[in-house]
Structures are given as C-alpha cells and as structure tokens.
Amino acid sequence: MTAGLERILTLTFGTEGDETNYLGSGWSGNEPGSRWMLGSGSELWLEHPGSGHDLILELDIGIMDMPSGVAEQRLVVGTRNQGIAQIGVSRGGSVGFHIPAGLVAAPGPVRMLFIHPDFRRPSDLHGGADDRELSFSVRNLRLCRLLPRPAPIGGPALPMDQLIMRFESLGDNCEFGLVQRRLGAEPLGLFRFSYIELPLLLRGLRTGFNRLGDPDTVEVSIEGADREFVVRESVYGMTYHTFQYERQMALDTVRQQQATRLNFLKRKLMEDIAGGEKIFVIKRSPQLRPEEILPVYTALNEIGRNWLLWMVPADAAHPAGTVEGLLPGLLRGYIDRFAPSENAHELSVPVWTAVCEAVWRAAGGSLGG
Image 1 (tube, one colour):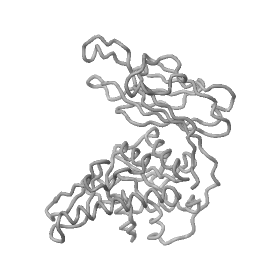
Image 2 (spheres, one colour; image 1 turned 90 degrees about the vertical axis):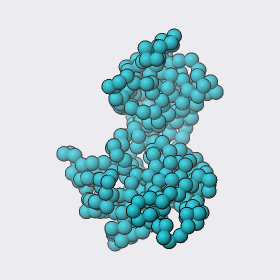
Image 3 (cartoon, one colour; image 1 turned 30 degrees about the vertical axis):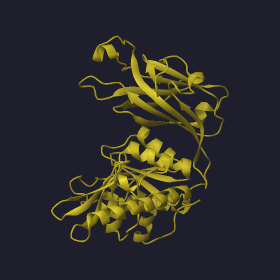
Image 4 (cartoon, helix red, strand yellow; image 1 turned 180 degrees about the vertical axis):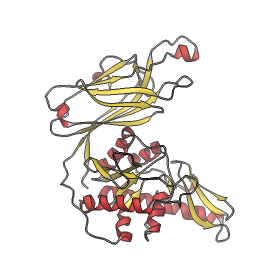
C-alpha cells in the first residue's frame, strides 16, 4: 500500500488532551473533550514539520450558538503571518487548510494564527455568569504532509462503459450512479445509490466503516406506489433504494440480504481505497467548500494514493466540462447543472461524460500506482 500523504501530528484538546505545550495566546482552560478559542484571535505553535512538502492542517471544531439572523462565524487562518484561508463556518465538523511548502521552508517553530472576530459571551446569549468571549471549540488537530507521487499518466483509450467503471461515487443522491447506468455500466459501489452526510462519511473512512452492516443497524421500509423496499442504516445514516419490491420477496429476507451486501461493499470500498484503484467522485447540495473537501481528500490519501474529483457548478471562468487540478490527486470538475433533487433521472450526461473523459485522459494511467 502506498499512501498519498503522511500524518505527522495528532493533538487532542480538552481535559484528557495533549495539546498544552502547543498553545499560544487566546485559549480557554481545559474542558471535557475540547478547548475554546477566546476573543478575536488564538495561536498555536507547531514544531517544524520538515521542508519540501505541502501540508494539510485539519481541525475538528464546534461553534457558538449564533444570534438570529447571523448565518455563520468568520475564521481567518494564517501561517507565519501569511493568510492561507478565510472562511465562514455555519456548523461544527472537520475543516482542512492547505499550507504550501514555501510558507514553512525556513527553520524554526511554525506559528499558526486563527482570527475569529465573531465571538459570543454565553451570558449574553443564555444568561448566567459565563462572560468568556467564546468563538470555536476545538476537539482535535491533525497535520499531514503530502508525499511525492509520480507525474500523472493519462489512461488508455477505453469504451465509455468501461471508462466510467473506474469512477466511484462517495454518496449524495443517485445522480452519478444513474449516469453510469445511462452509459452502460453497472458497477458495485457502497455509495452508488446511497446518501450519507459528510461528517459520517469522514467517520466511516477513518474507522473502516466499523459496524456498517451489523444486522441490528439495518432497517427496511416499504415506500411509494410501487411498494419498493428502502434501506435506512442507523450507524452512518445511509439511505438508499434497493430496486426490490414487496411483490418479489419478504421484508426479513431483504433485511438479511442488505446486511450482507453492506458488509461486502464496505470491504470492497476500503480495498479499492487502499489500492488507489478508483477515481472517487464527490458532490453535495449546497456546494461543498474547499475546507470541507480537504478532510475527505486527507482521509482517502492516508489509506492509499488516491484521486478525488470534486464536482461543482460551472461559472464564467470555468465552463461546463472544465477540469482543474488543485493538489496532487485532487481535481475540481465543472458541470452545467446537477439533476434536480425531485428527479435524479434528469441528467446532464454529455457534461458528466466530458468531465470524466478529461479526468481519465489526465490521470487514468496513474490508478493503482
């Protein structure tokens, strides 16, 4: 197994944490499971990570309750007095930031600065005596270095039904799975027709989807005019159509089959990730942001040397069918429109085809290497 990156630091924050020696100004005292950023700015001091590698810094964060009408909290991240990201955070979760190698080339400790002007006092929001200026709570930090990988190699000419088999969805609606079907391919994939929330996808990738497929976690219901069996999985919140119907078999039989199926597909997915065998496709509505994509990229590339295609709507600077490289193994593709949520069959097949062909021409020969 060849990984795409290497984790070089993991910190846990809070009462049982190991982060104290890395803290600068702007932090609360220990609390169970986390530590708060205080006031308008907080510092971390990291040991020098070595030269010549780009880095990905990840934080697992929570946010303060926001007053009515405030959609998000601002966060600016800097490395050695150079800004690397400016984001708005509307909910807790994992966020990732790219640190170019040039910013940490000089020797000595690396100062990370977090500017968070939208702090709140709990006493102002809920009453009580807690008048601390709280911003973001931090549970964990992960720092990874990108490892060298060979220059991308274009894939060989393939019929479209074979080419599209080398791509695999990381779960949203059925859209990409239906694109594959429209192009004559029926690959097996855990998330081909399944929905999963991004935080639960990350948890699954980091744990090997522990407990997925346990029989007591698989619920089957009968839905729709055609009385189709629909699966809801309770550990990772997955929901998907089975394309099996009440007239064909008993509900208990479907439940047993689906538990077996989930176990098989999770093993297959983790083996494909370890071998770098697929180009993984991710999209969500509303559109994912770079800080949300980077943790997925990191999770995949800690396991194997992988490619991730992040699909977003086209804009004036990026026509539909365009593909751009962001990091080694991370590509962003542009589509004219996604299928509407009420009708996943209303597909933009020509643009999906153009994007996947462009990715294959750029990197298809690099899979499994």
